[in-house]
Image (cartoon, helix red, strand yellow):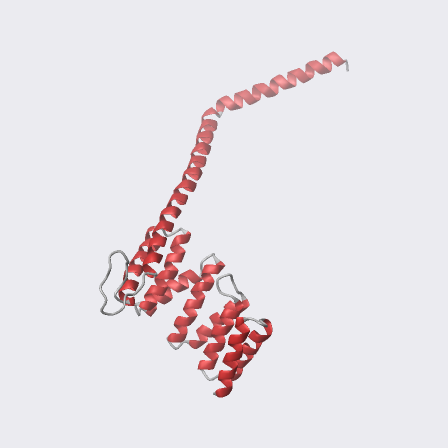
Length: 239
């Protein structure tokens, strides 16, 4: 085939393809415009949502800081007068009541933020202070399921203590064992072991307690942990 004929055929095919594409674009112009607009809207929502949630996180974080300050406010000595320049509470109950309300408000108003997860944890702690074990267990269980392993560990530690104080030692033991097998930055393996050993000692399960204290000595030589474990072992011998 001659070169000029092949060139002509290529040009014809290109013109046909271009014409077909142009025709398709004209026929589907409305759909193309709608799709483009939809894409812009989705992008706008994503960007707007990002800044919206960031803003809510900042607001929640600020409220959480205030609530934690309330929770850490000192209790003034009995009979002393309140000094406005130095905030204090008359009792643990008074402090827990105010802090609990603040933590609950954060969890309700900012439900999908990290601050809300921490607020639920502190809500559980203040519920314990208020003597409401049912509410404390509910909040701590929710926090124990948090995506943050460090926060979850704190909640499990508090929950284990709650179970022990309400005569549910088997549930407490299970949680301490979980924390021992899966330590975190907030609850170390040795911390969980120390609590578990103390629980066994209190239940007169001396052999179980001794085994853990001896393991703590072995795993943490020349440390304060080893010293505490040694002291606890001596107490077991005296019993």
